[in-house]
Picture 1 (cartoon, rainbow, N blue to C red):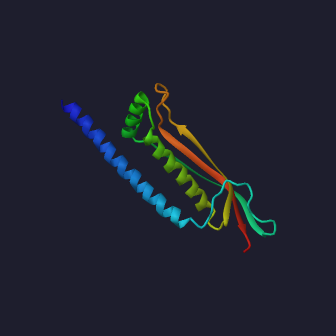
Picture 2: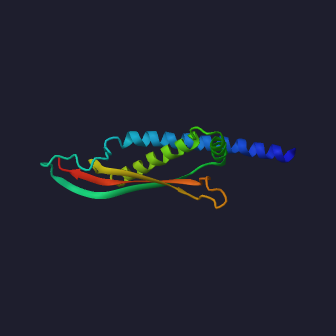
Picture 3: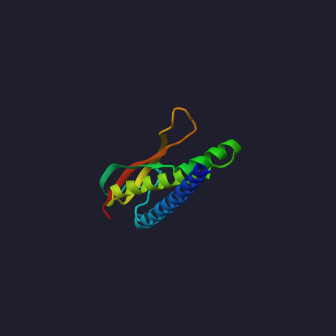
Length: 150
């Protein structure tokens, strides 16, 4: 009975700590998105007029690896049994993509626009005995940072 209580307490602690960390990360993302809002990030290859004097054009990238906590992994495993949306992974991927775009913008603070933006995601740390288990999500955003004379 004592071991069951310890397991329940550890799972509860994992849930609380994971939720706090996720909410803190979302707050950080929201404040940094507001800070970098002046640099538009678009997937279009070219939307600059021909008569614009381009000062600098360079490839920029931002990447992040975010791990899933054990409580969300348990919930996702249950969801895989019964079917439906796996919201635990949806928030993980959302945070990873947004963080990668922010890191890309932070790499090019003087850019006027980032063109041809692409985002790649992959999983890291699948265990050998459980093919559906995801350890971490990697997201990488890359594009062409353009600075032009105004």
